[in-house]
Amino acid sequence: MSNRRDFLKNTGKAGLILTGAGLTQACGRQDSGAKVQSQLAHIWEEATRPFNSNFNMSGYAAEPIPNVRVGFVGLGNRGPGAVYRMAKIEGVSIAALCDLRQERVDVVMDRLQKEGPHQPVIYAGDDEIWKKMCERDDIDLIYITTPWFLHAPMALYAMEQGKHVCTEVPAATSMEDCRALVETSERTKKHCMMLENCCYDFFELLTLNMARQGYFGEIVHGEGAYIHDILEGNFSKTKYWNFWRLRENADRNGSLYPTHGLGPVCQVMNINRGDALDYLVSMSSNDFSMGTLAVKKASEDGVFEEFMNKPFRGNMNSTLIKTKKGRSILLQHDVSSPRPYSRIHMVSGTEGFAQKYPFPSGIFKDHTFFREGDEGYASLVEKYQAPIVKKIGEMARQVGGHGGMDFIMEWRMVDCLRNGLPLDMDVYDAALWSAIGPLSEWSVANRSATIDIPDYTGGHWQKNTPVDVDLKQGANTKILL
Image 1 (cartoon, helix red, strand yellow):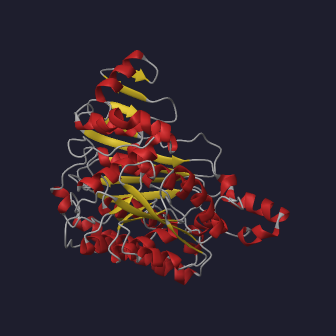
Image 2 (cartoon, helix red, strand yellow):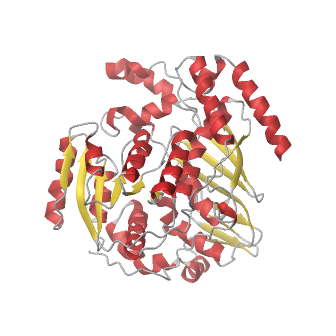
Image 3 (cartoon, helix red, strand yellow):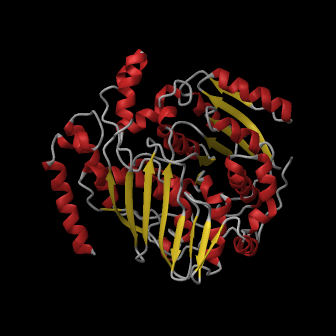
């Protein structure tokens, strides 16, 4: 293995030198070729740089916080729903609300005052005002729902101010920030949880529990995806502030949003807790949609002219990952093709198989395929459904948030904080799952060459305890419906 990596290290660096201006098109950026070479070379350096852990945050239990005082930053698409859901959890105090736009804060504040006793402090109207919120002494947790490029800087600053952090996905968009998140969490001993809600969807929790019970035998292969036609939404003037998501797709070419599909598969495979991701290869198709629409939009509205000549990322990205114990993972990412929504979520083992998308959920074992809606399928769900779904699943559906999975995630996080329990997803998961984005960019730009995936646990993955949402501790937090 070391010979392979030495060879790739040498040829990878050479490739960055030889490809020249071609990298600009391959990487989907308008920067100069020299700048792109530097950026990609830095991804390689970070990928191959050893990580030495100073404190193991896996399984770390902070002091119990009976009343979790929360400050929210980012009240655009995701933030308001998070505020309303968290307000329905016992032991949560909405302490502060923050957004660049005063009108977004006002909307959330008006509804919050009608629904409960929360009286948060308001922060708005300044690019740096969120820092003032993080500096308050009466906040325990910062909940981040801003554009992607702000997640890591805000999380880092909040931890430095003594706050636990939960952030929307991805937690970081650069290798440097992935490393910084881990180093800061270990040093401050503050939780940094990425809000990967798909790990708490009903079927994903079912397959995790089935894996824990040995239903699939030895896990061999997994697949995950984010296939979601948001082409028109990316060009919306109101959905994403200042077209931030469109800009991400114009400036980067790879698996930009990998965590929805990857997170649940990693939990089933015990990644960071018994196994580890080893290396990946990634390939993107050309862009057949975004560039064309940009030209059309620009002909109708001058505000889109800046996007006319952007070399947008390809429609479909496919990324293959190998684990240190020999398992394989396929990830797909497509947000611009007219396809049905799919996260795939497929688990394949030596004794069983399960898949959720794009057809109705199904489980296969002993040469029998049980489809959702069949009597046999219902029996399996009854037998293997996760304890957390049995306890709060119906209430979560009432509260909502992607069918309830958002609320299950938030209730579980709060319950763990209130009871001083380890979180199901830690900073190593946040960094590792997010790092697939920049790593895939490097591979795409280098004709799908392999690149190593860092071990952010510093070797602790070999002894860390697997995630099991069994509710054997805590689970005493009430839901305020």
